[in-house]
Image (tube, rainbow, N blue to C red; front, side):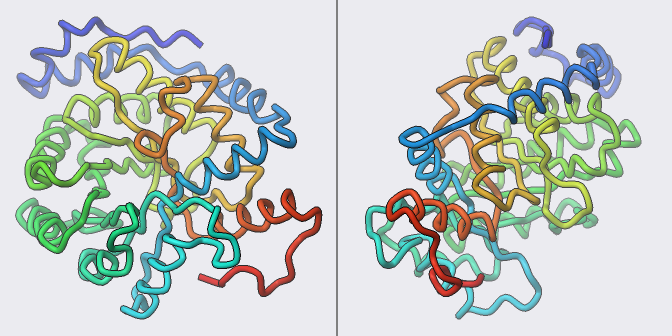
Length: 319
């Protein structure tokens, strides 16, 4: 679907004031809701079989940010999660590692030790996750603590209240400040909580706002609300990163999170990536799944392809 964006030179001064930023964001093409949802549905019907399915399953495993974000998280649970990220299938060492484990800032050091030497990244939610209702200095302290503890990636939430009130420059300045707090050692994922943004037009505006502010990834959701990642909102964000790179030369990743539980779901999202942004994004440096239960189904399907039968209920660990 056409998503022509302003030329790259137009981005140079769009953040000069609230009014210029508003003019830019509201000047983005409106989203054709029917067309967007129809294309997402159509791409979701693609059939992936045999060798291609095996490749897709391993690729999806390598893209998982294995996540635990509960008040009852313990060091033992985080260590177990780290061990699973490093060796998802203890009976088959050919299974790829996951991309990362994602935890609260106070568990970063534990997670870092659990995945040491494996290449698995440690991501940490920050900025008063999931609501984002805190003063900026508190949010930045949250980020700095996580980075100091060894976080490789920071998943921040935007101030949805400010965004919905049209205070775009406030949201932009906050993302810029968090990016600075990440330093040179941590990549920044910016979470929009798409289920609270009400319209596809708002999701497109948030995507461009996050990318202009320096996001390394744009992310759909926290997984803590009723509506999280969907094929349609992820397709819209993939179009945004594709168009942003075409305009600026800068590549930004995408992370759908929440509600992606089955291999079938994951493969549908991989088809969206390939058909919309292209093969450059089919890598865990540029695409991730925020998930906890997804990995188990991927492992079950992987064994089914290898052995011709499904595993018993004790084949995978319960996270």
